[in-house]
Length: 480
Image (cartoon, rainbow, N blue to C red):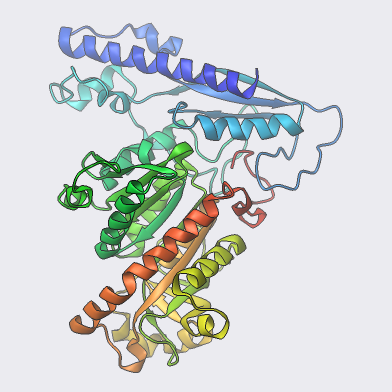
């Protein structure tokens, strides 16, 4: 099979399994018909499995790119969910592998089943609350935590009992788990997420992004819609579009997302992740299954140097990880390197938006180490932390940046951080209400535009240069 034929077959198998599962659920709820016990033995509700079989006659060629490469002969496999949504990504990975290796593709039913809750929401005639969950679980596959995990991501599991190696970082149960969580946390369909993702933790940034997006839609160009929480979708012809988004039900969702949509998902998604490393880990754990081209944090920080001014920028180049949330899966002694292409794009966008160059830009944009803490009142314990902070040569402190970068490193998603100094607690310039409001009015628009222009610049070359080999281990699944 060609890559397109392989994914066509995966789509057909997935749709057939989903349809059979929905029909069995409908018969069970509406007519009391229990499903045929042989259905599950036949694999009627199974995810499709994609296999890449590589049996070369000679040595494995040394391919220098960071993904879509095979390090040894053998069979590589993964289960697939939502293959229509992931089609472009899957075909791209398979096409690059097929161009460089004599491989064979196989697609068939797997031994992994689609959990029934993942199809219920598409079955409008079924009242899922008419029966207790235990009744559904007697007859239909359910989500099982023993089958959902990040063992491949964290390098803890490679070959299965048959010697088959993982083809991708995430299998179908793990992907479906995160797709459901994304809808819950952000209030938007997972299909609307774009491949270039901005994070912020202030709703004022959202207001500016929405205003800018609405004006950009009116001007025409690559973007066609803006999707907001609660099913709100506007375009360039929507009257009072920004007001419609602002009055929407975004407050109901923990981390509301806004998607400026373009073809092939090459637009920009903004997620308001709120405050703290726990939220940062939560959302990036789930966004990673979408295989975005990159994610970047645009937030606020406390400046730690006397020479910094309120409104200056900090381009994170290294991180002192006092957030602790990732320590069990990525110990803090593991370095998190900067991604050069993202760093350059952020600096160049800052120069364009601010109009500063040379020494003037250096005075406003400083590169260095960012401390990320899980204690918002770290100032009250500064005496205990001052020596370590000093040894780190840190120039800023916040609560999310290191988590965003470290989970990007862990999940093989290129990352970057551009922070704006909102206070200088070590130098008597505390974030008081009046000063904070003046800062917000002055700084947010410019900061948001730098993030947007960075993403547009990275998207202009398709993101291919972003995927650095420094994000990949020596023994990796082939898919990016």
